[in-house]
Amino acid sequence: MALPPSMLQTICFLYAALLLLSSSSADPIRQQYVVYMGSSSSSANGGEFAPESAYLQMLSSVTESDDGGEMGLVRRYQHAFRGFSAMLTEDQASALSGQEGVISVFPDPILKLHTTRSWDFLESMSGLSNLMSSSNSSSSSSSTSGHHISGIWPESPSFNDEGIGEIPSRWKGICMEGSDFRKSNCNRKLIGARYYGTERTYNDNKTHSSKPKGSPRDTVGHGTHTASIAAGSPVANASYYGLARGTAKGGAPSARIAVYKACSEDGCSGSTLLKAIDDAIADGVDFISISIGMSSTFQADFLEDPIAIGAFHAQEKGVTVVCSAGNEGPQLNTVVNSAPWIFTAAASNIDRDFQSTLVLGDGRTFKVRCKYLLLLNLMFNAMEIMLRALFLLLWEFSSNCYPGSLDRNKVAGKIVVCVASDFSISRRIRKMVVEDARGRGMILVNPEDTGVPFDSGTFPFIEVGGRYGTSILKYMNKTKNPKGTILAAVDVPGYRPAPSVAYFSSRGPGPLTENILKILAAFPPKNVTGTVPAGEKPSWYALKSGTSMACPHVTGAAAFVKSVHPKWSPSMIKSALMTTGNLCCYTLIIVMINLSKLEPIF
Image (cartoon, rainbow, N blue to C red; front, side, top):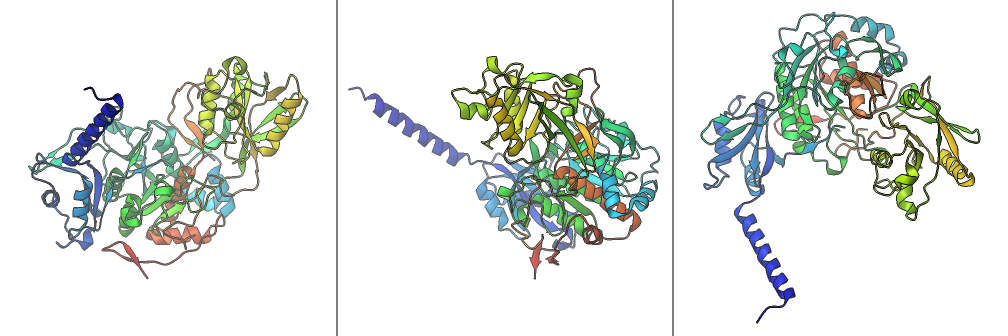
């Protein structure tokens, strides 16, 4: 007798579930964990680092005999602190956490990558213009800034070594070669470059590692941008296709730069970042600049945060660590990298703005903030383009410019007005939707009005607040044939208020430290469709916003203070910058640290 189809489906489902459970129990899932064992001064063997065999012995104590001989040791930390990362199951990680000498064991987190006028503005606000100019013109500075970022574009004029003295003899770093990077790419300015592959160690006590793929070269632009802000050499007549023209320079132009490429387009491995910090300390850097951070939603305590751990041991060795606060504002409790021993930087504006003018067909004008509409001067200068509301059956979807919601026949050749009532759709996605529908430009009506210009490349894009947006929509609804003109962007000097905290900058208080309370810079010259105006060569510079850009400003300022007071400790430099600055106010709490366990004691 044949079984009914419904019963057959149920039996098949149960059988598949049993197979899955059986497979899971036989082959538990492994993932990478970091095993942190404290500083060298707290080791039981007098401060010497454990040999590789000691880590393998620890792993063998929690590894089953039928694992096929592979121990899964990935990285070792052996300069400023002790420990390793390894491929483990959850049970194995739990067993390791209870062993003597182990402080914490945690899954390897994936962290994310969080100017011409800015330094002049900061100097004028501080009244130190002459002092900073005379100090930065010196070629005798021996400070080295280590940037843990996405690499560097060595050919940028911001990294030329003209006027820079010989590399200090205390420097122990290297310039690693890669597929598109040679030792000759380093010079007296860019003195070090590392990138990281994956090593694997087996229980035959031999390390089997293939040559890392890639190179220290920057492919996303983040590393080049931040490194030039902190310590870029002066470059006259720099601009972004004519906008923000001036002399581009870092806060400490005479300082050296070392790059540790710990990130890719997919993010930054916490275990790799720890290795990069460990190497930077051993190489002899004076400052570490980290424009990277965890999500504020999933913040770990300090014993499971790779940046907090690495920064703690860097501070212990006399290296100042500066980190970005994150770009998840304006909500409260979103600040990251808030450990007391980290110098955490928020983002603010400066006294320069970029504005465009929208002229409606009835003669009314609206001045709006924008960053990249200067490209309209090259592509659509003062061209009249139709403005037309898109009243489709699915108004809610089309007005928000959801993917697939726009009618190409109605959109082609027109400026599309999108209303951001659904904030789950990013500006970048909306722009791509309009482009795909062959729109000629875009006006985004955003009731929140963040005031942060969007990088739209060569695609005409402006964003207006609720008040301007209401006027534009009323005009479109009352006019049979609405028209408008978008004018090219211009620099607006003396913009006020400035400085003020940027809308996107993460806010405190930090969940673990509740009591602690736009920039032109170098960029890889990429020729990507939609980013370079017709007839122009790729620019060596770009305009970017974010706490990633604020972080190297603090690093450059710290390097300047170090050049004046070379014997000052990281805490003294941090205190000097925080208590004498008139841009922000801070409340400091004094924390005693147990160096062996990395725990605050009161």
